[in-house]
Length: 315
Ligand code: FPP
Image (cartoon, rainbow, N blue to C red; front, top):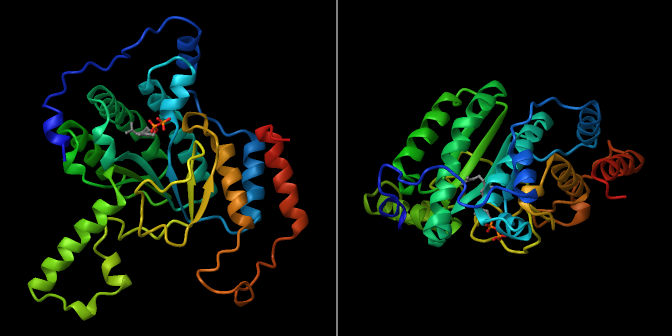
């Protein structure tokens, strides 16, 4: 793990864009990044009401936020601009998730493998993370969002760790939505770590090998307090799990959109949830073994679909 050695304390990099901020691209980016005052529109309230009435809102949505680099490069901007723009997507997605009554939102913010990116990109990501934690704290506190994290957080720069644990502490009593940032996380890392701890407990005689079950192994994972995701969304069109929640995604529905993460907004979350509502989760059973949802008419479902297509412009 290269984390701590990679970031001498204190940070020496100033938080400033390391690219030319003149011209159209920069103007557009500044407009995008300006923190906008937030008020929910009546149309948005209506679509959320319909979506909820459609039944079967997932409790836990996991997201692989991908495509930041490509988004930036297509605009002639450095990759870090894509990461910065991605924070606005996360903010809007979190707001909508909370309004819809999702209980858990888990996002892949920085993978174990991401440490191997160029030093400058990693440093900027850490800077952005710090800024995000500071700037979003008030809204999380006001909106009942509990901040949580999974991953090897002791690999993060000390300053980030302090801010992260402070934000987690200050939001620990919130109970509307748990927002989990996967940081320095990978599914295999968590499984290996869990196996090591479990093996130690066997050696100490605390458990015997025969006791090892799905439930027991699960209790050793960093995700032990989260239910498995019902829905996993991946942006930017890639059809991979990329070492995310390998154990937990066993029965999750997967939704892939071509949209790059910095362009992802609540409407895209609604589309993913609509797709989820039309899926039949069988958990290894046959279709006829499962009780059909009889409460929601096809007419209602197609009305919601038309409504979402109208607001997303996908007619
Ligand atoms: C993948 O895009 C995305 C990331 C590595 C970081 C995602 C983080 C955020 C959106 C912001 C919040 C979190 C932090 C840590 C500030 P990519 O760079 O792999 O895109 P590409 O596939 O187009 O190259």
